[in-house]
Length: 319
Image (cartoon, rainbow, N blue to C red; front, side):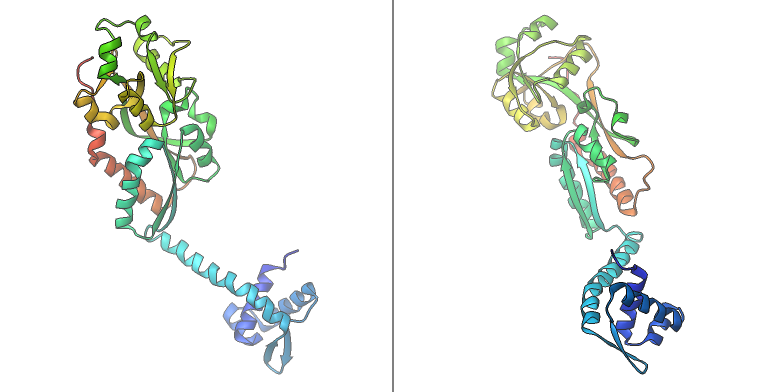
């Protein structure tokens, strides 16, 4: 059983001042209350902590050992409370952020760096992953918030993961693309849904949920099976597979903008509107954001507005 923490606090001040009267003055209580608490602590521990010598208190060996245990806790507690109070005045401390893998690598590391230029006392932990992985971590308090890729939720409502506040912060165009060589060799100008089903595909998972979502959006049909040349859980690997003529894959257009513009990658479009993936800021619904969180989220939104990568949307005329 742990001793009463209030008695340990009183012991700490008696030891530090070597006087019951001085400890009572520090704690703003009576000398009688200090003596009573000390007596109860000694009874609880079954060992004397001081030798009484007139008005002085001489620590016993047990008293010395107990003080050495308590002193680091009191010191760290004092510093911790000071830091907590300072966090209300200026951003500082650790922010735990979740983000999609490629967006996290390509964008958020730069945002962290620019935010630390403004507030060097802020530290970051970045958790990369799919929304289905990140949202439970937000619910459990292991992440302060996450930027969720709504397309990767695979049709599951976000409410399944917890009571969240959701704010859309970014839209990105999602395209089905292949290399020019693959396009010239296997795809006709008058391609149809049936023709596309015969082609090779590169997907993030064997279930090819994102590919099937593309077909549903553009053709209002979901293919039961696609011919998989490669499955790999990496946007960069998908792009590499496309460039190596392995087949068609889903990519965010802003990540491959230059390849699209110079003709290395061809986008497969239809008469339907562009397929848009929405990235949303997800936080616990009733959580009150700290000053650091508020400042970072505002900084992040500003960086999104100013980053040219997100302004590169649209793939031109249908291929």
